[in-house]
Length: 505
Ligand SMILES: Cc1cc2nc3c(=O)[nH]c(=O)nc-3n(C[C@H](O)[C@H](O)[C@H](O)COP(=O)(O)OP(=O)(O)OC[C@H]3O[C@@H](n4cnc5c(N)ncnc54)[C@H](O)[C@@H]3O)c2cc1C
Image (cartoon, rainbow, N blue to C red):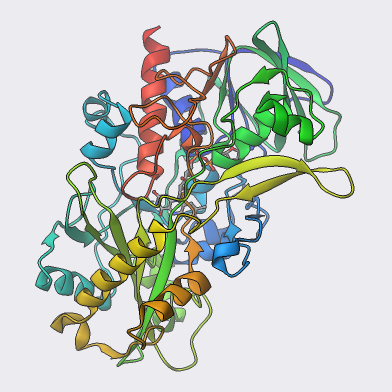
């Protein structure tokens, strides 16, 4: 790690060692590029809860979490919604739910990603594991999905219309794997950890340096590079741009920041997946939390097997309403009480069909603002359920989930519809507002140009920032729209694409 007040110079400087930044560094290094540096605010030390799949919720609120939260959401009864984001080498991929699924062809067509098909067949150093054993209730769920007419794929590698299956997991021998682990031992990559980038230093349409500060309290240092690639994620990337005077001039002025580059949609176009847990009480008491006993721990220690290797949301189903979208709704099945896990339940056991509208209409923004003491704060406002259509879409997703719960394979293990007894649409709407949570898939705050339109693109189709000569962005913030599934694999894919472009040029 550099010492205080030093000056370092590289060819390629990547900011953020998360899913995208780590993958990109690895791909560039494998292709023989030299003098690469990755600057990361977190460290490499991985606590046990980030290794054991079933313990990932214990990462939330810990030292490896940025611990963001939205501002009060008027349409969610004024609640603030927690937004964990990984602050560690590996980023959010080091604390996520391990689900590995490829987005569908319709997504790529809508975004103009005609290159995606060809890239997905490339060698993958992070290939996921096929779950060998899952909780028996997850199998009941999958049978019920088939009974309702969905097509089963075992496992489900890519989102498909009206389908169901077990998830592939980012696991090796039962333990989590993530892109950050692939940075170790790369000769040509200098990994600078525990250093947060505070500002990009600009001159004549170029980034000429970075101001960074370290956890150890050393003075800010400067680093220069021929090209700079921002991979700080959907929250970190727009915040860093705005701190550097890049964004909407009026909003920057409100935050008392001098505008250096007018890029009005930095921080705008924010989209996220909400999840609504539909919890049922089970007939038996054998839910997942109750089988995490000492026996499960020793199985995990001995050969990486047993219930501790579960990522909790073990099985899924997709439903599509239109030809141009791969899927509109997704169900995550958990053999737990969704929002009480990881706490143990009171002798009763629960299972949950957790519904997500994959393409909500509500859009929000992330913006820096001064608080009353004059410090800069991140204002995260997804404007959840602010678009009226989103309630109707959730209602349709609920009816679909209930039709699966009523199939014989689930009906035989369900004792009681715990959260939804009423059939009134008003009661359902009230439940959406009371219980929705983020499922942690925010995207879009530095959106790439796409055929979708309706926003001012921040980067071009080659990930190049529009307005500076040597700045690229490659992370979840460039996705112009939400993928029709969990996004991590799509973010690996876009990192692979930028690597391909940089290697070719
Ligand atoms: C709890 C949780 C569960 C999830 N579950 C799944 C799942 O099961 N499957 C799935 O597909 N997706 C899942 N996701 C989403 C997925 O993990 C993320 O979309 C993906 O990791 C985002 O990748 P990224 O590279 O854009 O950002 P990140 O992986 O978040 O990387 C950003 C990196 O930049 C660093 N950084 C930020 N600001 C700075 C700065 N100023 N200076 C230096 N470093 C900085 C951060 O510390 C971090 O390491 C989940 C996310 C969370 C949080």
